Length: 410
Image (cartoon, rainbow, N blue to C red; front, top):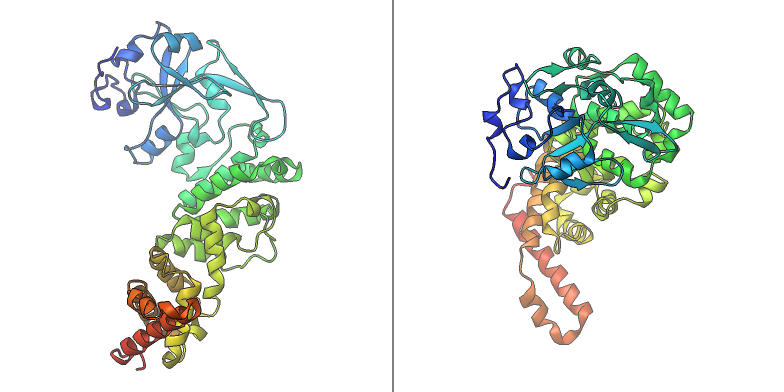
């Protein structure tokens, strides 16, 4: 079993979706007992049908017991349900299973995996119809819950009322809206999300799980869609710790623009959660907290950029507060953040402000690479205070010289 089988492009499935078909010629899959069926399932099928073929594959095994995969050489992973890794490709192969709600939260489920569980039973426990499609070994599509139609209609629709049993599904739904801005949530699914809100299930969410889904959504094309959806549901407070009514109405559009500018997800999280309170705010990653601490430096960019003759003192103080002398790698994202926030200014001043902001950041970059070791050595006998003052004066003089060589005052 140590040799590799045929590549995916050499699979035997002849149906219209043969490129997704599980490869029975693979020596590990060939070792499975007769009567066991294999399917490519979930997001891989969905994404392929949307035109993306370079997707990670997840597979479903129907009619098997855990020992069948053990005997074929697969490696078990996880504790909550039977999932195995292919020894070479590391693709996931999960036994067909059903779930029963036994407690609060996304962990409150009892899993039942047995050879009697059918493909339709396993697909039924999934969240949305577009995630409940499968491709068999012959390359044929199995779509018992209308996922393909929903893809064509750009609709996110739940499969069964069991959707409301797992609060993480509401977050995944919001995240999908960030990923596919042209999709809409079906009326019935939105109503089910309202029921989840009203029955208190969202309070079972843990901060770490919320952050995982939020981060993924912020890293997508239109994170503002996610925020709008959560606001429409009136769940910003229990999920993110934000006041629905006090949320900046311009924030969703600002987050979308931040994605266009390729700002990091941590910075977008800072823009969204700087005023948040509660468990999520208390457990944010260090990078997000660092960006939140930097946001006050951007509160009045127009005032900051006025009067270039005052820049030598203002710019060096600003750069020091932003810690860019030790962390110059921040400057690229900080420059983009300034562009984003300046876009909120009136059109009459935007062009002028953007030009000045570009020079401001450029000077900060020059200062971050300016060697001050000689200045420090010259004051070494006068103590730390004198060293700091000499370095500050040196940097201000440098900015003054660069401004005199430029046309910033024009």
